[in-house]
Image (cartoon, rainbow, N blue to C red; front, top):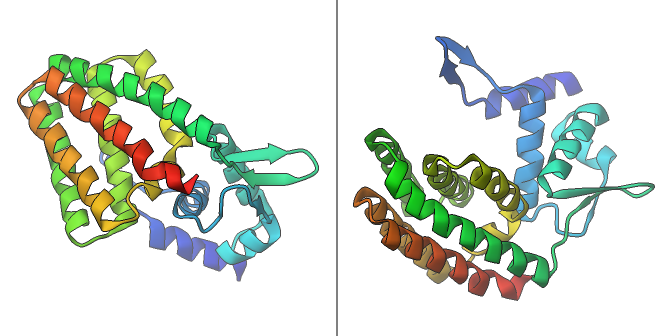
Length: 233
């Protein structure tokens, strides 16, 4: 029964991708990691709370083994802490943790914006534009979690097209740890609309290959993030 439910979950969550002519589907491991990560991002598993493996495994219809493997991945991402004798806890960031990480992230994205406008190919820019347009459609229908994931993917795309691997490595670590914090920054209609306006400015700057403008837009966006989230920390 449990195996059947897990298989069904895989089918429900499967988003096939094509690589080398073959259709690939996520493994159970991938699905569990994504599901638990989403629960942390949305606050279903609150910051600072203990993750009860038995209860969560039963809720997801899986055994403890794939859940424990998923928690190890999320611990590497910085979303979970594995504490001896206590088990897994959802990481709780202090206000200083968040402010410090956002400060570094702002510096990284400022640099990435300048490099992206120098190094991106026309195809890179078209791809980011497609992602942006899809994100705007998700905003139009207020589909918040998929919007958030695509929003984060766009920030990652700016880093990728900058062409700087060291920058990408540090940025990826910080972005993973701030997922829940960034998600709560769009809780109200006004803050969400402001974030969307920032992204409109970003895509216009990228298409104009105006590195100074894109850097300023990214900096403003991340500085505003602190204003939007500090009340919730």
